[in-house]
Each structure stands twice: as C-alpha cells, then as structure tokens.
Length: 562
Image (cartoon, rainbow, N blue to C red; front, side, top):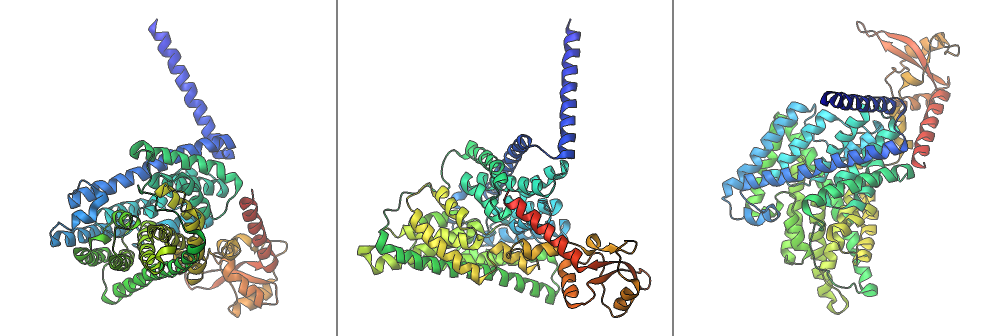
C-alpha cells in the first residue's frame, strides 16, 4: 500500500516542477506580471539582505581576527594598546591581498561601487559587472577588515547589483524590469546594512534609479522591508547609534547658525570629494612614472594608512566609534578638528590606493566631527541663545553625507533612522539643504556622478545628455541596399575628404558631423583588416538620428512617469 502513495507523491512533485518550469518560461518570454514581480522583488530583497548581513559580519570577524578584539565597535580604542609594528603591518598585508585580487579578476585594477551601479541603471538595462563585482566585494571586505578607511555601503550596493543582474539575466528582463530589480536589490542591501528601511527605499530611487516612478515604488518598498527584517533578526530592533536626545532647538535664534553650518559642511564635502580625486590622480601619476605594478598600489596605500594609524588609530575602518563619541559631544574641540582632517586624508589615501569600500560612513564621521566643532564655537559665542552642541553634530553628519551622496532626501531620513530621533529634523533639513545646494555647484552634483564624469560618462545632466552615447550608428543607419540609401558618389567624395564614421560610432560623436555638414547624412564605413581601406556599408542620416534620439527620450520619460 505504501508504493502507490510514493508514486502519487512523486507524480505531484513532478507536476509541481513542471508548473514551475512552465512559469519560468512564461516569465522569461513575456516578462513578469505585477504579482509575480512583487514576489521576485521579495526574493531579491531577502537575498540582498542576507548578502549585506554576511558582508557586515564578515568585516567584524576579520577585524576581530586581525586586531584581536572582541568588540569591533571600539576598534580604535583597542588598537591604541597594540604594538606599533602590528598596526602598520595589518593594512599593508590587507592592501597586498586587495591588489592581487583586483589584478587577477579585473581589467583595470579598480574596485566597483555605487557609481558603477548608477551607470548600470542608466546605460546597461539595470546590469552590472558580475565577475568584477565579486572581486570588488572580496577586496572591500579585506580593506575594511584590515583597517582601510572607507565605508561598507559601496560594496554592499554593488553586491546587491550583482544579485539583481543574475536574476535579470535569468528571466531575460528588459531595461525597465532590470532597473526595477536593481532598485529592489539596492534598497534591500542599504536597509539591511543600516537598519533603515525608509532611507533604503528612497536611496534606491533618488541615487541609483534617479527617478520616483510609481510603478517601481511598491516592489522597492517590499524589498527594502525584507532587507530590514533580515537585519533585525540578527541585531534586533535598535538604531545604529544609541543616543540620548540632544535637547530642544532654540528655533528662531539658532536657525541662522544651522544655515551657516550647512554652507560650511557643503564646503567640507567638496574638499572631501576633491581630496579623493586628487589622491587618485596622484596615485595614477606615481604608478605611471615609477612603473609600480598595479597589484602593489593598494599595499603602498596600506603602508601610509598604517603609518597614520600608529599615531591616530581613529582613522581605522568605518569609524563608528569616533562618530558616536562626536554625536555624544565627548570629543574636545581641537581633537574634533584634527580627527576630521585626518579622516579626509585617510579616505583619500584609501581610494587613491585603489583599495575597497564606500564614502557614506566616512562622510558621516567627517560630518559629525565638523558639526561638533562648529557647535563648540556657536554655543560658546552665544551660550544663552543656544541648545546642545550635539545638535550641530547631528546636523553636520547629515549635511556632509547628503552633499557627498547628492541625496538630500534619503540622507536626511537615514540620519533619523540611524539615530532613532525625529526631534532634530528641522536642524538637519536646514543644514542639508544648504550643504547640497553649495556642494552640487562645486562638483558634478555628487561624488558618484563626478566619478562617472571623470570616466567620460555624463549622467548628471539627465538622459538628454547621455542617451546619444548609447545609440550606435550601425543600428540607426540606412544600408547601401536600402531604397532610401544615400548617393554612393557623394558618399565616396565625403569618404575621400575623411568625413565618415564606423558602425560602432555613437550618435554623440556623429551629431556634430551631421550638424556641420550640408548633405544631411554622413557615410558609414568598415575598415579593411589588411590595408585599412574604408568600405561603404551605409549612411547615417540626420533625420534618422534625431528620430532615434527622440524615441529614446520618449521611452525614458514614459518609464520615469509610469
């Protein structure tokens, strides 16, 4: 009698597997329906949440192993008791491991982070590099575990992008679906990393997707909540920083001080970002001049960091201990200024040496120290008209971070969620608005968009600026067999004059040629492999290029307003 039961169970399992396979084929062929997409968003949220949690625990485990402390939240205090040679050696060994990983698994020796995810959302249908992304995750884990001065949000965001890319490729997602899945993964990763579900969802919309389309909101929120649940299952329902309310804001009297603090933080944020770019340029120059192998570059940066940490261990790692002390007002004025300067220098060395990590956590530390130093001066100047100086530390933390990320909305909310205190909202909002307004004029909107601009990828101005670089002449051109093909004799004349392009030429390059010419088209040629002789294959017409560009703009607008 048992055999028929097993046979029936086997039939049901086979039927269920067949239904699943049929469903997967439908999703691949037609794309997911709304309900299916929400379940996919939930699954991605859980996966990205566990990945972010594992990354955070991995950093803690590596720091505990290398530095020999059980409490990584107080890492710099413990490091003060270590022998100087150990503080120096750990970042060097970490940098050497990072260099070898990046040299082996990336073409350019560069760590992938948030900027690459933004590029993937805008220009790669929501996909990011998988192999390089996994290598970057390992490199960032080692960097942060061995004392590198950066944050964990950059690698976490790109790691989430790798998960979303895998799912998008499995279901053959189109551009809109791929971007939405990417947003879901990023929201979950940020939420799981910082226990900030609201800010995680808004970060994905504001920074990565760079629009607030209604169709993307629900799945991103679902994924963000899933990521938060993963975090709270391990760490509990607690804020990242456990603080006492700093006291009431003296509304009318103190608001001008927070406006000034916002401007100061905007300038500090610009210095912070430009210091990183300067260090990268110096690193590139040194590497080129002395012929330094690229796998040794992170080790050299580790040596510089270790040397700084011997005297100032506050620069080690994410820096939450120093940030917390600043928010509690337990750092003297002179130390706050010195620590802020040294942290900027340490972050610049970390990024200039092509080690891993992100900029969000360091910007929180620099902002808190800047705000606290300003608070000492402001409350000392007019003590009877001032509230607690720690209010300025809160406001400074949000102001610098918002300016660096170019994300005033999500950063304001993440400061609230990191602290669990909603009573300081006015001070934070005032400072954030001023800092982002100033910093966005000193750099290209944000740290990430400026990074992309330095790679000749222009996203800050919007799709009208970068869509032309995504369209290729070979796709838009009329071939020589087309009924409306260009006059072959005139094409030969233009080719002889050197006025021609190849099928891989982007419309961004072709449009100036079309604007200057009077023919309304430019020949498209393929160069012979042997002698380089151009062979006519078609022509790109001005009207066709404009139509293609207009269709791309319309599709982007439709997605952003759907």
